[in-house]
Image 1 (cartoon, protein in one colour):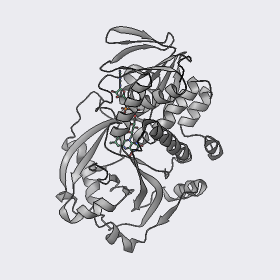
Image 2 (cartoon, helix red, strand yellow):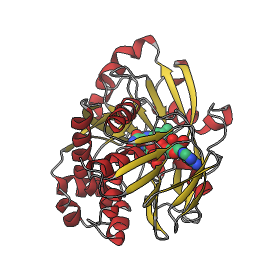
Image 3 (tube, protein in one colour):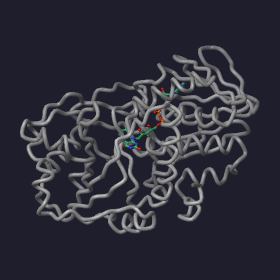
Image 4 (cartoon, protein in one colour):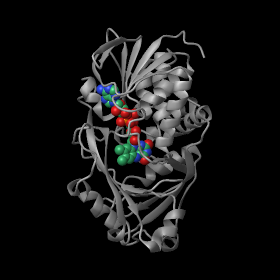
Length: 382
Ligand SMILES: Cc1cc2nc3c(=O)[nH]c(=O)nc-3n(C[C@H](O)[C@H](O)[C@H](O)COP(=O)(O)OP(=O)(O)OC[C@H]3O[C@@H](n4cnc5c(N)ncnc54)[C@H](O)[C@@H]3O)c2cc1C
């Protein structure tokens, strides 16, 4: 790889920042990564045992059409780092009341040629003995999804980047960015580059006013659990499960490949400060606790191993569109909004690198990353 294409500083070593560094390095840019903590940083949104990946995207249809490209880019990344930190499998959805989900999923999965089918309700107690069957109206299994293993991905990606010439600045909190000059200040020193990419996760509004009106940090709680004895074997066999009930809405990642059972929800708090503590209080967990008791039998008997707080950004409105925008002459701001940014990390990083490399216009890059491409345009991405 050459280093003749210019110098890019990436601020933030989560999946968005490291993927951008990866995609830029592959294109022959010289890259420096500035991270306020360790690389990778346990306080980053990206740092966790598992993340869901899937083609079924509910009403966010534009993102469903990007998923084939997102999966393909992960495979490229796995080849580079020499490890496939992915467990392919189904994602099963439990519907309990009227939600606008089946119709858009049916449309997008059909268009993508991905299989999805109903599981007869009579089969649920046998295959999913831990699931509360009361109020279930429909259960849908979608294939070709699975679990990504983020801590391992971030770690191996960091090693690959270091081996491929990237300069790391850990414990280097960036305090000031001049997007016209291409300079920033970290630990009292000024650094200069041809371009600066701000991939600061839930801290983004502390570094730039560009997306302040659109995105907000959101404090989210999750449970890590040890199930009661009678459900242990079943949890080993079930795939990723998502309950779409209005009151029971939860997502569950089973304990597989060296991970723990995790249950969370997708109700945004749109509150909190990413510099704050990371231990969930009873108040943080109140809604999730209620929902999990409706979604799972005997939830009160699960042992809590960890009550964790994680921060991501989400949009102030309900669009959940990623905010990926050029800022003045020399900077890009990258904000992967809501809880769906990990599966799209390499796609976002590759898109920003393509824009910096002049392969795609700024406007097209913003449209792509906001999930606004037509199915035909998304298919043409490869
Ligand atoms: C509980 C939970 C469950 C989720 N589940 C899923 C899922 O199943 N599937 C999915 O696809 N996505 C999921 N997500 C969302 C996904 O994890 C995020 O969208 C994604 O990780 C965001 O990555 P990022 O790189 O933008 O931010 P981060 O990972 O937060 O990285 C930002 C980095 O920037 C650094 N930084 C910030 N400010 C500065 C500064 N001033 N100077 C230097 N460094 C700085 C931070 O320390 C951090 O390391 C989930 C998120 C959470 C919290």
